Amino acid sequence: MNQSPQTSDGRHDDDATLSEFLASLMDYTPTIPDELVEHYLGKSGFQCPDVRLIRLVAVATQKFISEVATDALQHCKARQSSVVKDKRDKQQKEKRLVLTMEDLSRALREYGVNLKHQEYFADSTSTGTDPASKDE
Image (cartoon, rainbow, N blue to C red; front, side):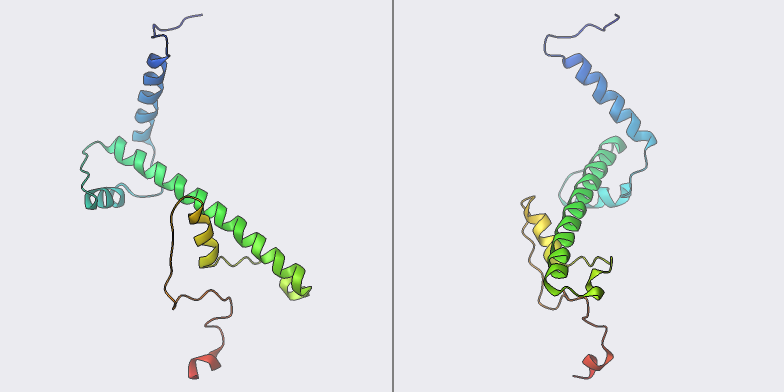
């Protein structure tokens, strides 16, 4: 078994793993563009010429957004399944999911982000679909 020298706490292995991961970021194109990440990091006062670090922030942001979206989807499914059970209506059983600000707000609250939306946001699936309601 060929192991490289390391300290008792495994620090050398951790450093090697981190170096490999950072090197792999050079070949990875994240969903969130580098320019967008650089813009928001710059707005917060952070400047870094290392593209690997910019991409690391992009990957972390992408993971956070993915987790919030998944949690919001679970809230949406739970909310809509309770509506189906209450109404027992065949039309309500269709598979179309409608994500509301309340679903997103609940998901974000689990991560310590309190989201308050303005009153003009529509949380109803029928809002804006009835042409007669525009004349009122």
